[in-house]
Amino acid sequence: MAASSTAPLANILLNSIENLLLAEQQVQNKDVAQQQSDDYVLENFWNNLSTISQKLSFECTKVGICFTKSPIPTANETSSLLTSVEQAVLSLVSVFYSLSPVYGSVLHSNVQYAVVRAIQAARLLLKVIKDEGGEAIPERYHQSTGIVWQGCDLIAKCPQDNKAAVLRELHGQNNLVSDAFTEISEALKGDGSGWNCLDDSEDYMEEEDKWTNEDKDLIGPSVNLIKAAKILYKRVLAAVEKNGSCATPDKVKELDQLYEDCKLVSKTVDTLILELYPPLNVSSMEEQSCQLADLLRTALKTCAQSHIASEAEQPHIDFLDKAVVHNLDCMKEKLSHR
Image (tube, rainbow, N blue to C red):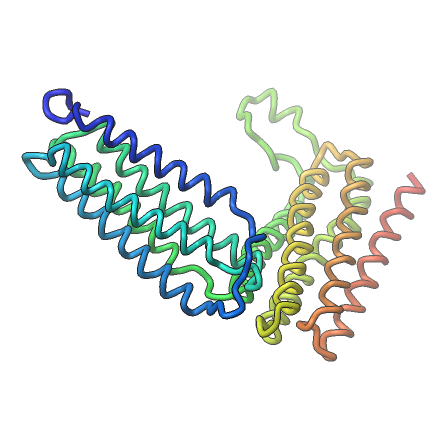
């Protein structure tokens, strides 16, 4: 902050920055194990959250405008401006705390992320004013205020119930799994060389690892397990979209559990694919493939026992489960003949 005119404001700004950081940490550390009211209405929660986030955006915009004009606010004026920002943040935290756990942990996580980002954006604006100060850098203020708008916009774009939240997360996981399958399928058209070529030196290019024909044969069942994961996501997404419901706490919990099981599938696919590239680590490939198979079967079982699986879905679930077992057995047989 410019020493000539704004140095006396530094402590005021620093105090607000620290208060916003504390509020941010409180939101980040909040789980879903709070008490719920029998008359809690989710629509009221969204109305309150929207009103407060708009208030925060307004107050931050006002701060940004005031500090781009000359003369900049006095200490008393700054205290008043920042008090309004802090009150908006505290109200935002209070509304977030009121979100009942009965509406789902995935929804809670989405809202939590959006609220944290909004508070972070407000804190960044104040930090820019404190560190860079003065009317000479209006462009930085405008940029920081824009980040506040984006943070508050995340709140406006939050999924409105647990079904929508689960679908959002599953689509993200599905994209990762689909990309992994496409990547390894394309690599299998060649010898696997150059997949992780971080060094452009000629010596490296001459020594890079490649698959042998035996390697490509060995990884076939593991690749098929990744394909099974891709199909799982396709079936689950369609089933949640068509049959998913938040009508009862039990159905909300089933959606949460399905998300948790699928998330583990996605993470294991990400780990497994790295083990498939040359130089092939057979023991790691086997370990990760077995883990993926177990997780796929768990996710399929969760799906089959939940409200999203209609009678029409059961044959697809059974077929995919048998395909997982078949490819796991196939991998073990190939390894036994090495």
